[in-house]
Image (cartoon, rainbow, N blue to C red; front, side):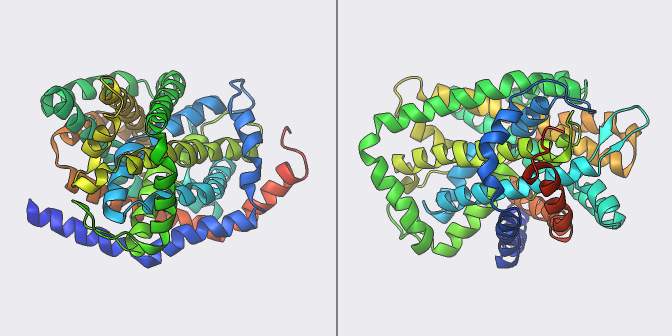
Length: 444
């Protein structure tokens, strides 16, 4: 098992080298400038996203599509992913995660726009879309669409399933002494109860769960920062400084250079907000929207809330605790940081992580099944859902390092064909944006 873990780590290190980091972050920057800094419309996007009225054809409301996408993205990447990034890349990784979110807004906007534009109506009247359809219909490269769908169906078990289940089982065992297999059984049963009903059932749960879990967690982080306010300015300064210079070894912390800060910050940023991954556009394609740009704006707010807000809070809290110097990692590091809130601190983290994990498992189950549906057809959807439930249990009893390495590898393989579509179809993205947003036709 140790040999297999080392092999996965070596593959992950190779894939997440400079070429992929440059391609990913470079795409964020390129689309930001091509779209004249689309991030300036984030206020309008948030306003549109809060509407629950049916605006056009689709399976679920725009708000339902957003909360389902947020459910999939706001997960362990915001809690455990941030802590592992800090341990591996130093405090500076927090800044690179944050920048990935800021510029990733343009990428999330672009991939959602294309997914709505090229979505299709299936025989049962439901909608299907995502990068696989964009690659097939927009680029006329069906083979790339097949590759994306294949990677997505596998990636879903890593980023959206086993990583999530593993994190909560470890935390619950450490906090309450409950066996991992018990957590696995309960979590798998709850998952089955929701996902067997399909996207409408998933969206209904996410619309109620996501706002609660995000607010609950942010309030907990705010309390922590208030309690330890005297060291917050120093911690923020440390984040900025080590982002460009690296961080020397201290205590149980082994130290990390700038390369590690950039690598783990961007890698965990992708894991957290999924901008460029091509996952969220799959559910965006099911939204009831007037035009592609309107839903693209709504989808872009997901990256804002996920990384620019939630990950930033987590990063400052963990760095400000200075527990990362003591050799801790993963959920245990974050739990120790939250212990600064007397009595209820670990409880806040456990509830937050449990809701994050459960919602992410629900959201990603839809991504995976739509990929399988594209590859094999609707007959494969139900078996995939039951396989999904089984993998939730397996994730609870697996080891953290293997699961994270697996997720990093499959994330990269999934992102590559999606980034290709964004780069080669950028003229269409700009044209649609001009038609509806820049020319003032966003409500048409």
